[in-house]
Amino acid sequence: MAERLRADLVLEYPFTRTTGPVIGAFLTGLREGIILGIRRPDGTVLCPPTEYDPESSEPLTDLVEVGPGGELVSWTWVDPPRAQSPWDQPHGLGLIRLDGADTPMVHGLLVESPEGLSVGMRVTARWRPEREGHIADLEGFVPEDAKQ
Amino acid sequence: MSADPRIPPAALSGEVSLPEQLADVEPVRSVRTPIRLEYDFIPGSASSGYLNAFADRKILGQRSPVDGAVFVPPRGVDPRHGAATPDYVELPDTGHVGGFCVTRLPIPGRDDLEIPYVSAWIHLDGADIGFLGLVAGIDTSEVRMGMRVRAVWKPDDELGRTAENILYWAPTGEPDIPVTAAGTNAWHAKQAAAGEQG
Image 1 (cartoon, each protein chain N blue to C red):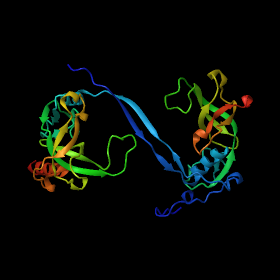
Image 2 (image 1 turned 180 degrees about the horizontal axis):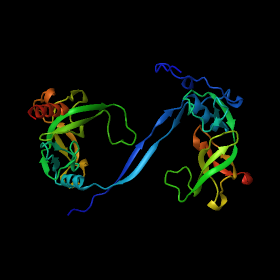
Image 3 (image 1 turned 90 degrees about the vertical axis):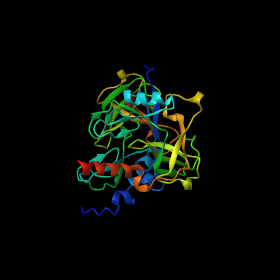
Image 4 (image 1 turned 60 degrees about the horizontal axis):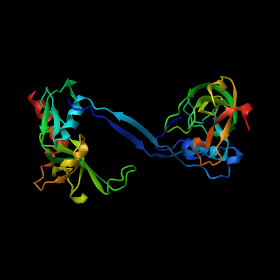
């Protein structure tokens, strides 16, 4: 019987997407160092912003600044990071409800060990010095009391 | 809200309100979102038989036990009936172009393909479905549905257990087969005839 066959395959698409004004505004904000949410008719704020109200499907257009601090709602620990992770060190992934927002967003938690994380803790955004309008402009979140 | 699909919703028209800090900056209009999946491919028995045979310059299909239809590449089953197809059929390296596409723009990650190039459904003689290949050795404007082709293989000392052994498909110069009998038209005609008999 012939030796078993095996091949390393790669599926890859180099997409560039147009953003539209809502996601575009969110990314513009990241480039400028602020985080935007979007206000629903009932006054609650979604962050990250969506183009449509998740209940009524009506378009949403009222972008407001939220954060940069917030509360850690849930988290997990990633060790080691995968090859294409934006982070090259072990890190947390968290759901962070930013101040002024009613929904949490997922992002990295830049701490050295999982012992540094707990649900309900205060965290704040850490920005990359060079920003281009991408979710990775936000390097991640750090404990608020560790802010430099 | 009465939604007319031809009219873009407000969220796409640019009518959003922004915090003051963003009033006068250039807005982001596009974003790079590449995706990449790396995986190990381990072929099952039908695909292994197909790939192993390539090392001997052989192209294998499998025959449906239901109506004798020949599938290439073989997948181990007749997908129409869920019937196992244990019997291999050796196919010739000749057939015709069942359909094709001329690509004039470079594809990221495929620098080995010189543009323009032609990718085509190759319908082998004796097979009931087509499989993908490159057509070369002819001006792209001359490629047509029903054109007879033959495989151009790598040199013997470069053959491996891979479909890449076939470099491309070149025209044989034989007369075309009629478009009505080419590609999937042949399949549909055969299925219709079988239906009438049944």
